[in-house]
Image (cartoon, rainbow over all chains, first blue to last red; front, side, top):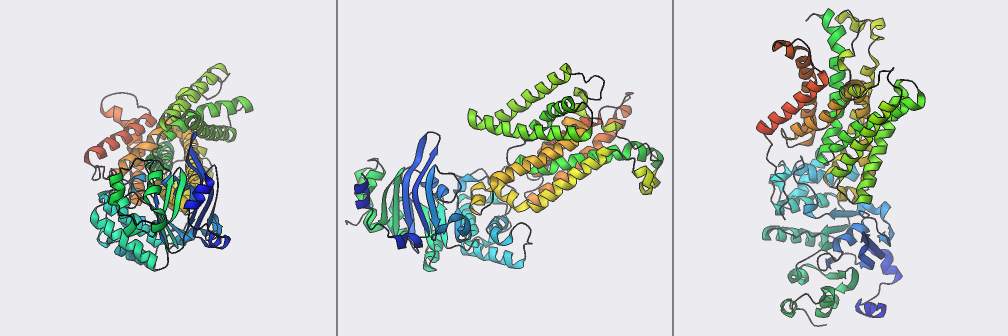
Length: 268
Length: 308
């Protein structure tokens, strides 16, 4: 089993690649109750690339991200961020949670949510000044939401909420961007706006990892994929790892052959 | 009413009522937003067994051990709620309900079984306090406010609730950002390194301190009402959190003042002879305010139903 997995991994990262990786996860196991959701997963995120985490519902995609970030406590596993322990490198990470994970009725405005991204800069008591607001507005500009700065967040559409979350992540000025289903339930214009921002991040040398659902857009949007169904299935470039065989193993045969054919995958 | 009458008889109960109301309403804003409003209810109920046990252990009705007993009971109840929620796998509301009714009932039993008849410790007092009796007998008028010997005789409850209020304000001021972050988006807050568990626990402890200080003066009815009613009413008035806190303070003060006045004079206006309990009236007024803002507040529509 392990040999087979290794064969599918493509290049196994050397010690050096591991040390440099923006996010390396080793032996990650997380369980809610008795059943493991993520089991003994290794992941090595490639620097400067856009990686999609792909798998069926309940396959542990979000949980893997959350455990890597210390949001949920894993049963076992190690995480290193740019070769160092997570605790000291938090300032280099920006995170976009699932939109539905928060209460959008919370009494706050769009600009205040984006300013939350400056928390590490502002600390407990430093006053919010013009420069901070200007930075937050610039981030809203990048996602096309400047006109909504003073709106209560509950007045936004789903796509607009997602853009605000992305703007907050931009305000963090990180090197590694982790996004949990950024395209879930958003309109086409928002999807385009988000992918444009993510591609511009990549151009600036940032690393992007996103939990992604739409198999049809994987090849357009991402350089690399990480296939998971509780256990890791495969990891590598789209050409290497996003293959019909791997998808079949990831989805346990639940994808119709027609669906896989439609993906127009390059034969390896 | 002249100063000679107002200052000794009504000034201190009014101030204590206002301070207690505001000290509970402020953390109540966060408890309501976190859907933990019932924690206030739980805390104010478990204070009773805490006080009784403190009395049984020390054998005296002294403020320090009783407040300590109440605080320990409050924190114990928080731990119990968490334990029941996790081990039993049931929803937090049910765990809170279970905890505070059980502990309150245990407090009543303890009180009945122990020899507390000779001391000022009873269930009525626990429920609606003794706000009307917290008078300033040494005052002779407004001039007493600058008279050191009269000031020295101010009821100790006044200082206690004032200190609790100052503590609550200081906590909210210093930890505003982590509180807001972990209330709105706990996962994101953790990625920033905010210890959301500790922040939540600190909030509950601060609420417990406010509840214990207020309970001592005004009883648990006001404490429960003030944790929920002014913040809930304030949420319907504005869509911004700092404004919401402002409104909750206004509503808490309004409840305390109107409640005190209505309790003292309202029955007379309707031809009844006796005044009614100020604590009961203050809680009632806060409920009426909540009802009015639910009917007429500008931000009544729930906007943020997640669009999935």
